[in-house]
Amino acid sequence: MVTQRIVDHCLSVDAERPDLPAHLLDWFAVAVGGATHADSTPAILDGVRKIAGPTPDPESDAAATVLPSGERLTPADAALANGALAHSLDFDDTHLASSLHPGAPVIAAALAAAEGEGPETPADRFRAGVAAGYDVACTVGEAVGPDAHYDRGFHVTATCGTFGAVAAAGVVRGLDADELRDAFGIAGSQAAGSLQFLANGAWNKRLHPGLAARRGIEATDLAAAGVVGAADPLDGEHGFFSGYSDEPNPAAVDRIGERDAVAETGRKPYPCCRYLHAAVDGLREIAPDVDPDAVEGIEIAIPSAGVRLTGEPIAAKRRPEGFVDCQFSAPFAAAVTLTEETADAEAFLRAVGRLDGPPRWDDPEIRRLMDATSVGTDPAIEARFPEEWGARVTVTAGGETREASVRVPLGEPEKPMSAAETEAKAAGLLAGSGVDVDRLAAVVESLSGRSVADLVDAATAE
Image (cartoon, helix red, strand yellow):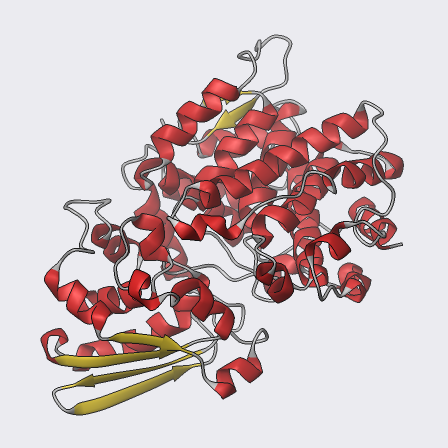
């Protein structure tokens, strides 16, 4: 019954989503930015090439584009590359209720599937696939019970993103009801992704959305070829919900036809774990009135799920050793924000050594501020979670204590980034990439009547 509701939604999805252009611009910017700035990019792209199938024949084979280089690979391989690049800076959009990044796997799968259908594939089919993918990924994420899912050690973007990628690719490719059921049934045996990357800041996390996107292409390929998938892959006796969660909520699927998950999804102003964003907002309020050299103590209170990811064990979080470590370190985010008065793309990328200097995690000033930072939760913040991902921050400096509370972080639908902030983020990430931000923004704002080739061309380096 759960799978059938999802299939029915995919077959009747409404692609008219007012917020979709902003999310598409954001996705292309973070994917190109990931290709440009992430330290993992050379290894990931080289690895994708090594495991890729033969280079597609442009006259006869389905192919898709790796951004922004224009390299052509099979749709599955391009989906893997672009999905990984879009998450490599941890700067992609976030759906709080399901605690996942829907855009990275969903848009990568939809784009690869659309290109695989041919360059003249209408962009409207691509938009419909993206809309379906967001709805399915976020719905399955809520239904599995994200807290319980995390407690079992799974990364929800990887696991639930797989089902979103199947929906996206299936809608773009025009699969019928039986084929979609089979594709979701196949995906039930593919959904995977471990949180063990936290142990050493591994690049597994960056691969997860790409692997999910690739699985979306593969599952729909197999289903379209007639491979029979498992019945009831989500709520069956041995299905995804029972195997991956101690507290699933299958009833969450009941509202899939009533939601616009794109509109529910926030976009990130800072390239670090979303649990830290409300704290960064609060510290930005305080920073102009504080001399970093005089700071004696920093207290950060966020939801307990965020504490586990960004504050424990505290000794390790105070001594990050790489980019991913920094993205999941509340002490590092606090130190950067107090010294730079922000943790936006430029400030954060500079602090981790991706712009014009060495990384700052060994800087004595940063270390002193990290050592002064404690991370915990607060009963009021915990009670409002997961509806709100709030924070309370307290900074003691020069004998004075300043406090700020933020209930909704910048970038959420209730507190959206302005058009100027959205364009500035995209422009910063696209700078030097060969992709013109104005041209790309114009295309994503006017997709109706265009082909997918127009979109890819605008996102490819000149």
